[in-house]
Structures are given as structure tokens and as C-alpha cells.
Length: 88
Image (cartoon, rainbow, N blue to C red):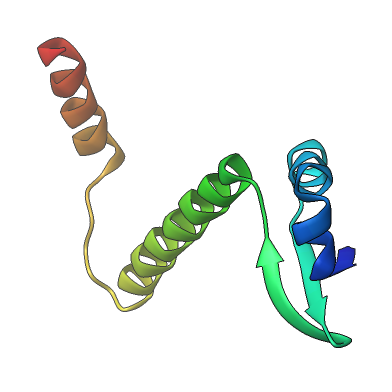
């Protein structure tokens, strides 16, 4: 975990930017010794957002499955995918 005082971003923006990009991890900034902000590079942020969206979708599908809502069979899914591929 990377923790830096908030003054670091004002004084050494490039250092923080490089650290975020090299590690792919967020940098936690403190103000007066308390947590204040979290900074991360755009690529890591976008990846985390996509991962969260996928997890939400998977959770929704699992909840539907557990509640007994019927989905599609493997063969139906295979047919649909073949149709989509043929169209492309």
C-alpha cells in the first residue's frame, strides 16, 4: 500500500504519476495524518471499473439462477453465438 502526504502530489506530481503507472496500485494521500484521497492511473481505474461491472453482472445471473429463473441451454447459446459470428 502506497501512502503519501497530500503535499507530495503538489510537490512531486510526476513521482506520484509514475508510481501509480508502474505499480498499477492506488496511492493513498493523507492530510494532517488522516486519509484524504486516493489517486490511481487511468488504465488501472478503467480495469477496476470493468471488473466491478462484470462482477455485478455475474452476481445478477447467479441470483437469477438461484431463484429458479430459466436461462438458455448450452446448445441455444452455441446457436446464438454461431449466428452472431456468421453476421460479422
